[in-house]
Amino acid sequence: MMGLWQWLYDLSLSTTLRNSIWAFPIIECVHIYSMISLIGLFAAFDMRLMGFAMGGKQRRPISELAKVVLRWIWIPVVVNAVTGTLMFAPNALNYSSNWAFRSKMLLVFLGLIYHVPLLFKAVRWNDSYEMPMGMKLMSIFSILVWAGVIVASRWIAYV
Image 1 (cartoon, rainbow, N blue to C red):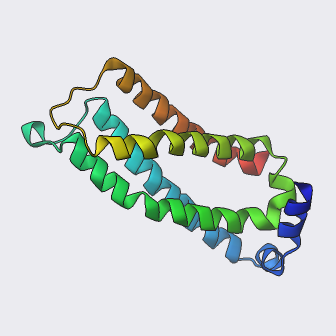
Image 2 (cartoon, helix red, strand yellow):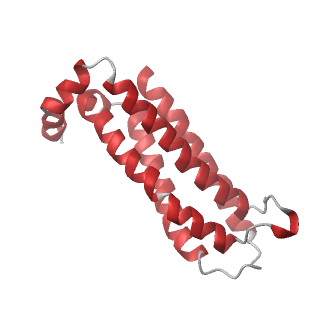
């Protein structure tokens, strides 16, 4: 695996990003705002599964919210993959052994493998379907996973 990290590190694009004063901060800002969008979409869905909703009796059904979230999550997922790769490549040797980076990647993976299949199922749910306690607890766990992504992301620079 070190061969791949070394290859990424040695790319001319990686060198350009490392030597640029503005490139990395701009990419990082796009990455952060995209991650905020992704986590916000998932958090809104999780909160709805827990029974929280705005609008009283006119609140959005879970299946309708799932359709909206499923439609919009792909933009921040792709943007995060691209910007994350652009941030990783110039620092591949350091990040590959950074426990905070590894933790972030694991938590993002867990969050995505939880949400994506769930959203595809939720699109077909009966709108009057009451969430069982297990689903509400999983939603709390999901929010904690995404909070862990935020914490791990912040720690990357300090480890």
